[in-house]
Length: 127
Image 1 (spheres, rainbow, N blue to C red):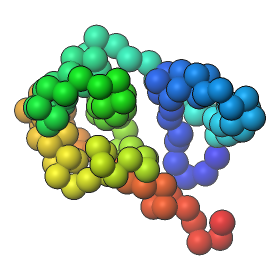
Image 2 (image 1 turned 180 degrees about the vertical axis):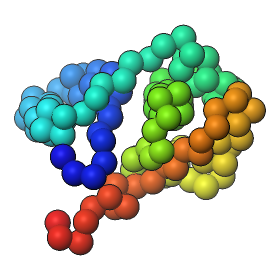
Image 3 (image 1 turned 90 degrees about the horizontal axis):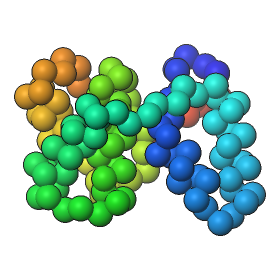
Image 4 (image 1 turned 45 degrees about the horizontal axis):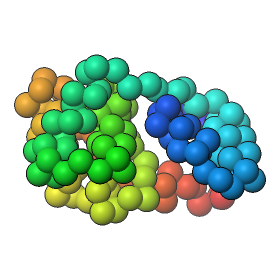
């Protein structure tokens, strides 16, 4: 697909399938297939890390959307993926939050830093 490997979580696929807009489902599904994305699934390890993020960074808030955001960071961390791409500037693409995620990661023995960015970082000038 390019110089980067693409990953998508089972959470994203579930969200796509839950949308009532059938055309959107088709477009997004086709994009995932075209990119040859590796599908990542939650595990006990990623669930525990996501819950730790929620408790520490978000003060124990329990919304499903927030859990999904934290789950994406946990999957990125556990699988050693350098970049998480998101438009969610409130919960994810936010320097204070990124520092919090990475502090928890280091405390738990993960030795790489997760960079959370908007898609604009990966759009080439030729596109």
